[in-house]
Length: 193
Image 1 (cartoon, rainbow, N blue to C red):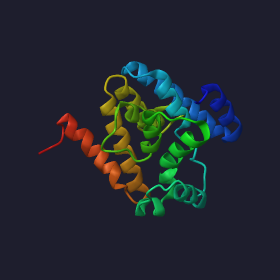
Image 2 (image 1 turned 180 degrees about the vertical axis):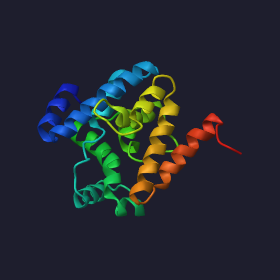
Image 3 (image 1 turned 30 degrees about the vertical axis):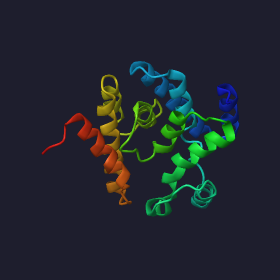
């Protein structure tokens, strides 16, 4: 079983300072969103703290760890190994820190490209990652505003911004992000016919 404070102390030593600051920002934001939307705050805090533990691996390390963990790597993962930091991070959270809660592990795994099957914790981590206090991108204030009342509206804007960014820089667009977006729109009945 994990101890939150020992995980935090370990990460502070192991993770670059700026990344650790981001991890804390996401953890605190996730905890706040969990309280707002009726989820277990400590679970959200821990998922937020661990969500980017694999983020600083280079492409070779990311692919090696994915292979070692028997993760299914799509053509998008091979083309952009950075997208694997969620699933690889979930494996690390389980193996290195003893986190066995499937909700926490799934939230870590899907925070990079989303999922058409996102539960509330998954959504919270995805949104918290994009709106934590250290974020300064153009849509962050609107994401924060939407997250005050409607988690799905905030999530949609986060996904839309990720898609716009991928288009802007000319990289591959992960189809799971599109599926995640479509799933939220369909569930809300807010798609155009």
